[in-house]
Length: 483
Image (tube, rainbow, N blue to C red; front, side, top):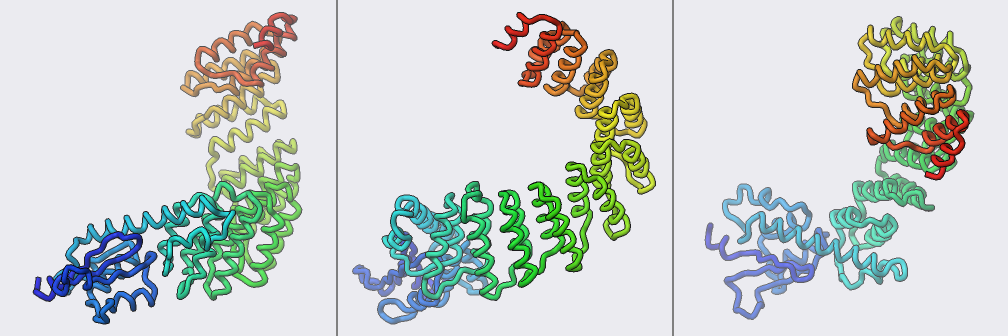
């Protein structure tokens, strides 16, 4: 290292929030060679002007300025400024600079959040934070405060306060951090959160930034989950009028939210608007509508959507068939459901355990348990592994018909295939044997459950009590009830 390089050192220490520059050659021991510069986190133009000229008017070496800038901008990477210089401008190692920066920032973030939590909302934010004597603001500091502050309202208050600093404007990524803080908060259901998140997107647009449709989609999804479908509708209308243009995810998200809220008619209106605006529905859009219209008994609409889907670029998939078959079964249109099931091969699709279970359930509720049992054999032939739902469905179907031998046969088969019965399995069996007048079997099943560590639920106990009452064992039923 040259003499000039050794002469200039930058000694950085944490004195509140300051960097101290030290020139050992001019030092007389009285500290007149030092200049102390206050800063928040990252330099603004004014900050760099201060550190480029010490108190005596002589400029600090450019390499030190660059090193300080690297530390302040964070995360620090001093080595990138030293490449090709030939000597180190700092007496400290890069790791020491990193440690200084981390300690400085962590201390500041803790102080900011502590002051906010102590005083806000009784006092204004400027009053809360005035004792910090911050002269500059930076995006990095704002993001760190937001990341470490749990209260979204305190985060927003700090965010709004920070943007009032001279020569500082929040960049897009800071807005995004604040946006996610609001929409992902556990307290996001509280009044005002979604309105503030919407206001952030508006601010970004006013600044001329190209705000991605992704953030609008996230907001619409959150609004729907909170039951704020009217607010979501208004946001969609604003997007259609002023941008960004809604995409297929926007429409599909809102349609799903409306369906879950039971607003099927409104969902179809949005669906029509989507197509009118030349946004082609995708498979998810169609599946969402087919699923929900089937649940409310509008299976005719589901069939129309299915046919429209087949004539579009969005081809039906296994989920589509499952939703349609489920709707047809609920409507008692079993033959049509079987027809759609057999169409799977024509479409080049292989039935999975979910679609088998769906059709089994429909057949069982229609009293066609023999055909449901045949589906189990078909599953074995086609290499589809039955699961707990499969056997619960089969046991429930034959149990309701009073075919207890068949019910216990399925029960033993599932255990032989290492499918462990759950509380639903036992509850179904206990209910079935109770109605068949076999109260003793019901009591034995309860004992078996307890031995296996499978805790009976309210349905289980009610089924047992009903079976005991039906068998005339009133005293025993009362004892079970008192338990």
